[in-house]
Length: 629
Ligand code: ADP
Ligand code: ZN
Image (cartoon, helix red, strand yellow):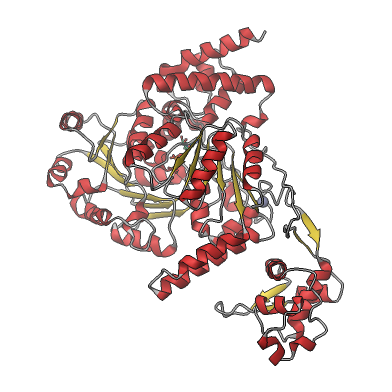
C-alpha cells in the first residue's frame, strides 16, 4: 500500500467507503472542512458530493447536520451511510413521535455522526433548542442553489438557513450544489452568510457519459434499435407530453419491454409506486415527462433517451445527468424533430413578462443550435457552460489543472464517427455568395429565400431577384439552407453580427477561402423528405468499469452477482444500488475475490460491507466458477 494509507483521510476512505482514491476536488474540500473553513462547492451530479461531508463528519467530534430538500434523497442517503457502518438518522415531516424520541436519545448519547434534516426543521424552536445543547461538528447544505431566488428550484424555507452562522458561530458551513451560475453562486454565499469560504467550481464534464444526437425519423424503430444496444439495462425515456409518454409506453410494452409511464396526470400513489419499482430495478424502463427525475438518487441509471428536443441546454444537461451517477459508463441519446422547436416557440407567447419570454427564446435557440451543431457534443456542451473541455484523468487531482484543451472527446457520436457527413462545398459556396451579394446584411431566412428563388415583396423591392445567385438553390428546401447556414456559422465560415436580436450571418475570412475554392466543406447529413439516414450506435468502451469490457464469462458472472444483489435488496427492502453499485459488481466479476482481503479490494467495499455481504457474494462467485468448470 502507498504511504497515503497512514493518513487518516485515506484510511477512512478505504475502511468505510471502500475507495482507494479521491475523485477530483474531494480531498481539498474535505481538508478545508477539517480546518474549520466554510465551503462553497459546485460539483456535477455524480461528482461525489456526499463523501465530501460524510468523511470529515467521521473524523470530527459531534454530529454533522445535513440539510437536504427531498425526503426520498434523505432516506437513500441514510440507508447508504448505514450500509457503510456510519451512524446516521433523519428528521423530517414523516418522522413519527417514536422515531423522533429514538433519534433524540442517540443525539444525547453523542452516538450520531450524521443527521439529515429538511429545511423546514430549522423553523421549529424545539429543534433549534435540541441543536443548541448538542455537540455539532459542522453543517452541510445539500442542493444549496435552492436558497437563491435566481436558481431554478428556489425554496423559501431555505432562506432561514442564513441564521445558522448566527446561531452556531463556531460551526463551519459547507454548501454543495450541482448547478450554479455566477449569479446564483454569489446569492448562495450571501444568503448563507458564508465566511471567507473555500470556493470550488469543478468541471461540468461527465466523462462516463456517451452522447449521441440524431434526427427523429421513425422514433419507435430508433428507440428499439437503441434499446437493443443497452439490453437489460435500466434507464429513462423522456417525452415532451403526457400523450407521447403514454404512446411510447404502450409501444414498448407491446414490443416486450418492461416499461412504465410517469407523468403529472397520475395520482401521487401511482407515481410513488412507479418510482419505487424503478429504484428497485423491478421496472427497468420509465417513460416520463420531465416531472420525473427530481429526487431520483438511483445510481445505476444506464441510459437516458430524449424523444423530443429539451427546452434548453440546462434541462438537457440535468436530465442526461441522471445517467451514470455511479461513475460507470452510461448512454445519452437525443432524437429530435424539426417541429419540436416550433412547438416550444408557440408556448413562448404565454410568458407575460417580455424579458422572461426573450430569455426563454434565447435558451431555446441555443438548444436548437447545440442539437444541430457540428463538432464534438461534449466540447459544445461544456462551451455552453463557459468551460473549455480538458480531458482529465479522473483518478488524479493534479492532472485537471495540467490538462490541455481538446476539440474531441472520443465518447460521442460525432467523435466516434457515427454521425453521417456529406460534402457540401458547392452548397456552401452558393450560400456564402448569396450573403456576399446581398451585402452581408440579411438574416438566414432571407438568404434561404434568395437561394430557393422565392419572390417575396422585400426581395423584389430590393432587386435581389436579379442577382446571379437568385434561385441557384431551388433544388433544396428553405429549411435545408437555413440548416446549412447554421453549419457555416458553427464551422466559423460565417460569423454573426453583434446584435443578437437580428442575427445576420456574414462571410468570414475562412468563408472567403471556400468562395475562392481553396477549402472544402463537409456537414452533418440531414435527412430531407423521404430520405432516411441510418444511425449506427457505438458504445463508450474506453471506460475500464464498463461491463462491455468484460469477457463473456465474466459478463455471465456479473449477471449472477446482479441476481444475488436483487435477492438481498428484496429481503432488506432497499434499492439494489444501496447494497452495491454496478461498478462494485463489475469489479467483483473481474477480481473474483476468495478471501476477505481480496474482497476489500473491490471498489465500494469497506469493512462494514465486507462483514454484511462478503461471504454471500464470495459464495456466489465460487458457485459460479464451479458450475462453469
Ligand atoms: P453527487 O451527490 O455529487 O451526485 P454522490 O455523492 O451520490 O454524487 O456520488 C456518486 C457516486 O460516486 C456514488 O456511488 C459514490 O459512492 C461514488 N463515489 C464517491 N466518491 C468516490 C470515490 N472517491 N471513488 C469512487 N467512487 C466514489
Ligand atoms: Zn466528442
